[in-house]
Length: 121
Image 1: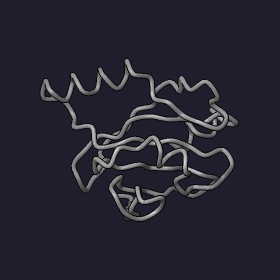
Image 2: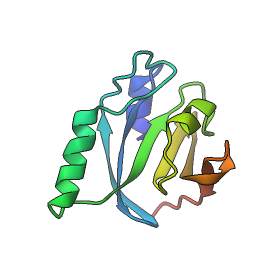
Image 3: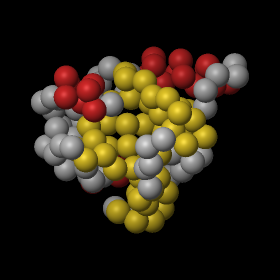
Image 4: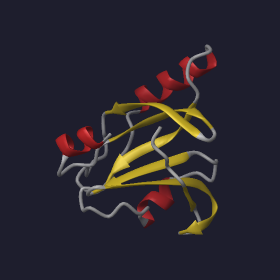
């Protein structure tokens, strides 16, 4: 994710997270199809639908999303909150050298994101 974010800068990089409720075991990078990729991200719907089809067929479980903030701020923005459904999915945000993890819900930052501990294994 860090490498993809660095390559995409000054545009936001984005992708999907796979695993279990408490563990990210894999990720993928997707195209950012946002009209303004320097300040927003939108995951390519084709990649999202392909991941959901694969999950239904017994593939890896989609547990969330990741994206970068080229500005260096690794906190969820108001735009992130407006885009996020309160569905319990993880959101990993990379900003500068920092990586943060959040769970989408109805509490916390912007009444949408609660912080999660992200541990490297």
